[in-house]
Length: 82
Image (tube, rainbow, N blue to C red; front, side, top):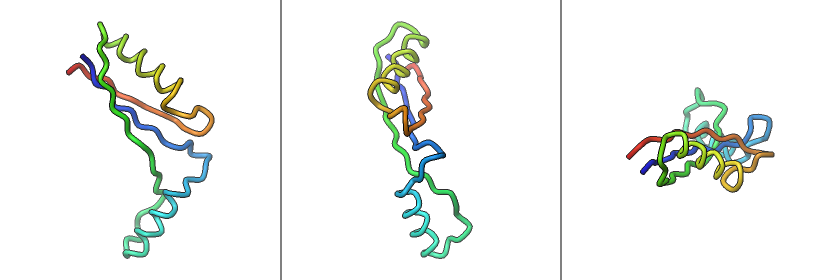
């Protein structure tokens, strides 16, 4: 059994409206040294696979086909045996 942890974020070329709103809120609290806030999502999957390579392949396929919008989002992931 493997656990995949996937981080999905908007591409840097796309304005992150939610991130800008959070950055504004942080600044209004006096934390003016914070900048370039980006909001993303984390997805965790449990995968029944025979090898590290199979688990990584399944994770990447899930990201490409359903979890991440390839036009607007980037993703990265780690896979660990549990």
